[in-house]
Image 1: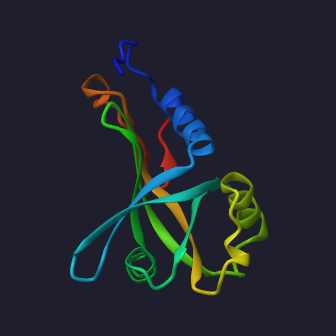
Image 2 (image 1 turned 30 degrees about the vertical axis):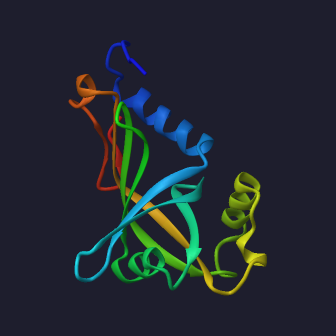
Length: 152
């Protein structure tokens, strides 16, 4: 993929990120355990309200890291069209997540974890920082959210 368009402004980058959050099914989820050992896995997700909602087993490394560390880095795209989201994670029991988020997740993915088993948990990741860029020409201006506030 060769990107030849001029660099996007912050408003266009924000809209492009929001469009991808609606459209894409998988997101890379990077976490770390208390010793700093990293873990990165792809998970299904839904953008609902102002957060990314994930569901995974509460006892697997990603679930434990999200619960215990309360932070995650999420990534979309490939090396020429990158979105990085740093956020705070909050855990919800399988039947504790807001119904709207759970229903949006099920509608998007075709899987409703609420009927699958008690070992799953929901994780809401609220973005604190978002970066978006196409190749090196867009590195300048890539920070489109800081401290939970969109820059443009």
